Image 1: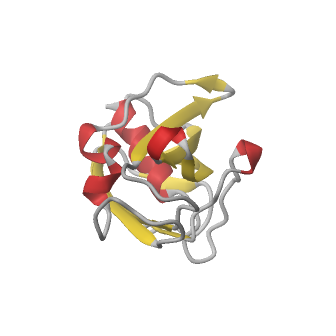
Image 2 (image 1 turned 90 degrees about the vertical axis):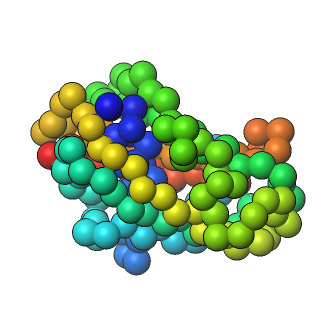
Amino acid sequence: MFKQVVAVVLLFAAVAQGLEIIQCSNNRPTPQEVTVPGCTSLPCQVPNQSDFNFSVRFAPTFPTNTLTVDVRASLLGLFLPYEVPDHLRNGCNNINTSCPLTAGQSVTLTGTAPVEAPLTGVTVTMEFEITGDGGQVAVCFAATVTLL
């Protein structure tokens, strides 16, 4: 489903060894590293009907008991309806340690998600945000992605 595409695409379209990201508005914190196989520059090319692996390394500046993953997608300035897949929404289930986290603790969130989009050949802007307790932003980045 397109909702799953948006989550996956944004998760892996960040700063991966030279891959530059688009900074989120309001100077929200950016990741330390994002790794996505096969993507070295924006826009990332994302084949439809496939699974993608990714990892995002970041360090929240505050202690937190929770991590929630949210993604927004836009096409030509219009926001697309979207829900993060259940297996990705709870970030504490997808990190290399366990919650709670201390301020400044570096963690890596990893995941695999299916890409099932109704459209191909379009470039979407994705914004990926992980929040902690009380909605505090732990990390945010945006990227452009072309659906193949």
